[in-house]
Length: 154
Image (cartoon, rainbow, N blue to C red; front, top):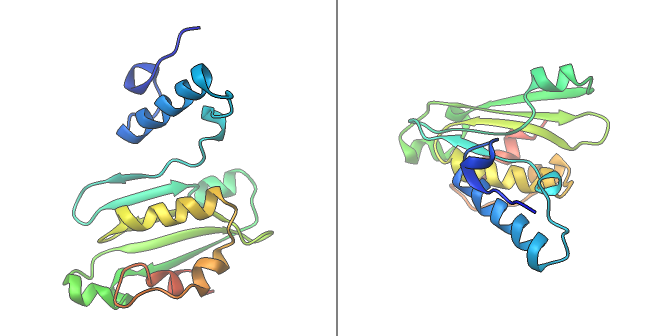
């Protein structure tokens, strides 16, 4: 067998993809071969501009192309209390929800600390946690994470 990891194998070129490639190769060589690129889950990414832009899963356009019955909900960062502490009202958070089962299909977060928040949404997608769990969770205040109470409130 020949194994390749990181940028040389093609596909997404992120440091954390290289780390997961290592996990897959380790599973193939020394484990039970259970970890594969097919079960690595959704891959989030962030463009570190100011403010950061983060994405995971499907956009509404992609959900429509795949014939999902979906809802897109948006929240301006200026509506999040933490923006006053961050002194930065710029940005928009968007989520795409499957209307049939309340699962999160994707998210695009443009705003301060989106690089952290996107990982919570990735976890919910991968673990099949409905959006209502994020909506109804109790978050510390004032944080950007508490925006999920409003972002998922529709």
